[in-house]
Length: 353
Picture 1 (cartoon, rainbow, N blue to C red):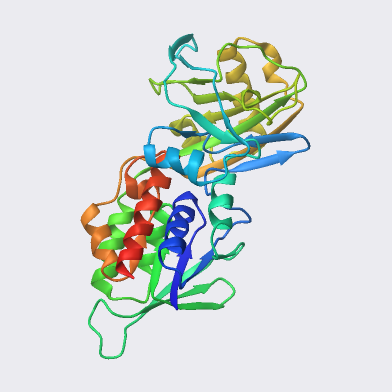
Picture 2 (cartoon, rainbow, N blue to C red; picture 1 turned 30 degrees about the vertical axis):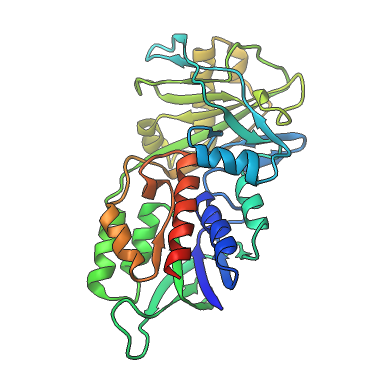
């Protein structure tokens, strides 16, 4: 039996587990996820009849392999395409057409978390939620070389998991770096990988969710500020996703610009929501938007990686049975990039094991 440990149940980890389960039949995969859900920042919440993706908004059809995964390999029941275009707005809040890309914008009627849920459901992996990993331990094999050994994990309750023949780390790069800096592992190797992960910069995003009992009729699905010169970076109309919002209602997912998000991250959430609602009302030119009937919010301190980790370090870690996975490994802050990286990582694991 080949034992594999996975820290984090994001999209990349789910894709890697899916590939590994099919390629290595005797693999026993244990996934430890600190939160109550799966799929990382591709997050979905529900309130009554309303479903909304409040992190990543959709997965694009930009990667042929990911497209085949969603539309062919996995059950495509409930997969929906957002057909309305994306418009732009400038520093003054002036809206213009101009960002209607050709690729599909997919989600599910049940939300984007279906991606990881469906991938894990196709495997024999065991997913333990609300299990926060606090420490990583590398046990060298008796008489083995520097690349031989086993991994163990210790959670915040002091429980131990493993030993594992291979370890997959899926948290955002800064959290991966933090785990590695305290790992019981060769100091030079530990610092090399931790430093490389810690060097990946991230954009912080603060998100407000605004619901209304009336529908706002617009010709677009979303508005984006490509110049990055407005307090708001993105406004999406969730009612454009089939099955998400009942007819006659509206739900706006408003993502603040990174600078605003950093400045206001620790401010009272109600104040942040009110300010973002007012800013959105100005951009969409509708004062009703200032008065939602209910709201939600989420801060993403490590939302979008600005670049990727050094590929040489990723390869060096693999030699020791340590696999890094996620959009920050792919070097592109997109859900399809995380999925593709997970598929490729799963293949490398299967070959290595």
